[in-house]
Image 1 (spheres, one colour):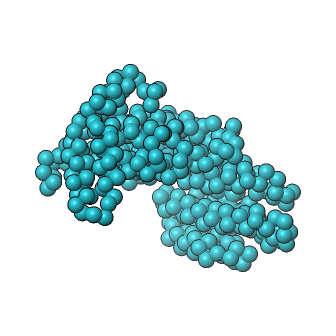
Image 2 (cartoon, rainbow, N blue to C red):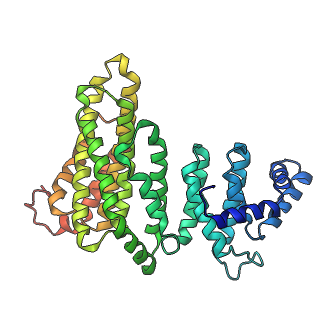
Image 3 (tube, rainbow, N blue to C red):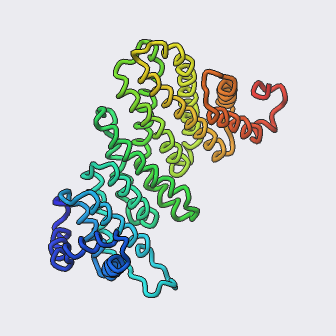
Length: 383
């Protein structure tokens, strides 16, 4: 938090004088007690602080103190999450009585503090809680009042070409964070909210496309060269997982915020790349049985089998969702798409019911499209 602007440092000093951290620490610990006489006063004491100005900011800055133990940091952040969920939006006519409204100044400092904490925090459990909290705030603030959020996340993802194995876990976290934000945008139905995101997305679209293309090429290159052995296996497997996750990010980005003139081209490009990845995964699934005969590589083969199966399920669902969202699957790709689905239905080397179900869902959705219904019977796709 030392990187925060001077006004925030001044507020932190003021808050340390205003809030009794030792009493609050005792109250948080007592709130876990099974004894009602001990727990209820502690809960009341914490609740009384909820409506005090800057208390939420105080909790978040307290969470950022790494010398604090893990349980206390978790409790402090969960308390901040509860306060934000209740009081960030102004709920008029609430049955809970007077509602505390977090001030605009406190909101700005909370958002800047959280972005710093996303970089500083290393514990996976704490990062998961942070992601949920940022997602809650993004629901109300992004994109109109938190325009820097998208740029922050993409700046952490854009260094993909220099990625190493140790960085992959934190990189996956930022992917999940971006995916959480994009999913919330898809749920918004107000034209004004979509237009606001559209303007921001235009600025960052090329960065997203570049990351997606790089990860896709690396993943397909790994799959296509598996017959040469399992060199650098752990890193390549991490890249494959990151690639599958970023497929979903790019699909949501195209669907939610890409420019209208390029949208059809984007969907064609995504479809072609996913079909290529499907083909590579299908080839690998056929190789796994023979590779498993080498007992020295049993663990790696099992990990590969599990990741390939999950990847197949994910891509088939992504493509099915894309087809459903777009209302069509373009002529140039439809035949390859149907052919790929057919091979997964009849490929008995893939012992996974969910993969077969996903492929059958592909077929069902194709049969519902106007392309299939309106084309003549002699169309190669229908045949």
